[in-house]
Image (cartoon, rainbow, N blue to C red; front, side, top):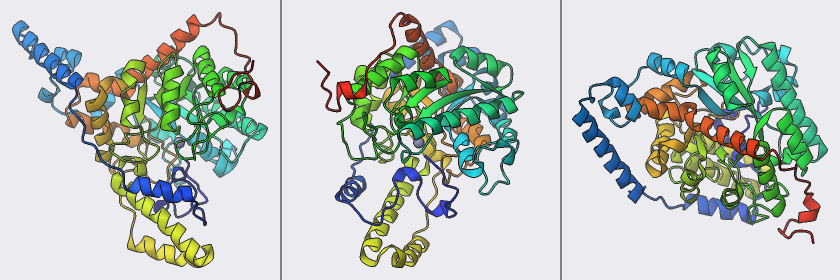
Length: 486
Ligand SMILES: [Zn+2]
């Protein structure tokens, strides 16, 4: 997600991930609009595993009663099964908990803000306090101090309009600007390359700063560039952004490869070998499945929510969610209003269609005031913190607590849900989840426990794969159709 500072009407316009609003509608636009407005909702089904879980909870409670430990708060934390007996945590208590268990956010676009606002001249945008910036940012050191954040994946992003060697250059410039920001504020931030780094840096009271590359176009079809990104510190790469790469389909583009090409699979295998997490936010469901078929280690969704709750193409469908327990991966629920609120999503969709219709009928210039009228008559509804919590509920009920994380997308979005306005509001999400009955153990898993487990699994696999030589596959040898060279 990108916030475009040039777009001063950010609050009334959809985020970039909805796709640029083109003056001329294609058949695909109409098709997408159709499917998106007529998606069916499915009630979460009570699966056998849920029944089994319920039985296990009951058995645990009975066993605890037998041993007379039900009153012990420690046992409650240890089992996480009697959370309804716990008082909901206050914000202060959440912050205490997050001192012990680091909260790791999967996606924050501060580096992109530095690029578009000040051409990466960090002196021109002091990170101590960005509230007075125009428009204000969601992240700065003063608010991070009050956020409970222990680890942050900073997004290394360049637009998909930039391709080829220029994309590689810009990607390394984004790594550079984040590293300069980290060393400028080394008392508060430190680069983290491993799960162990995250724990150590967090324990020292600094923010563990991880780098995640958002979009496979950043490697310019080169496994050599991929390896150099890893060496530069990148610990995840999202396979696509909003447009297809030459080897993977995006969720918001016309399918070109029916998922991953053979080279795409080689990218996934090489990422596994290196110990770089594969991020499936932004990719098409078919590419998600292809990756899950190929990956040897857990995947992540650095900033996505549940498609059944909010029918946005960027969200994760149930048949993919249901594969996470086998894979061990983590979906880091995002706050993007269009992704968490069906009301916001459908209104944005209607706006998009209205724009296309009016532009076609009147030309883009003449259509402008008519579109403004439509926006005045149909103000953008607000998503809320409660909408975000609903996605946690849904995913937990569907696949369990062990595959959930947080992926805010702060500073990548032009508007935020009410109650989650900036990084300092992150603890309030945990207050809400606690109020909904999540135990401390549950909250610790969501905060960062699950993500660290996935990162450690990726590291362990890379350690075991150290004897495997780097892949020397070229995209023109394996072909877009998946056929291998003879
Ligand atoms: Zn994004």
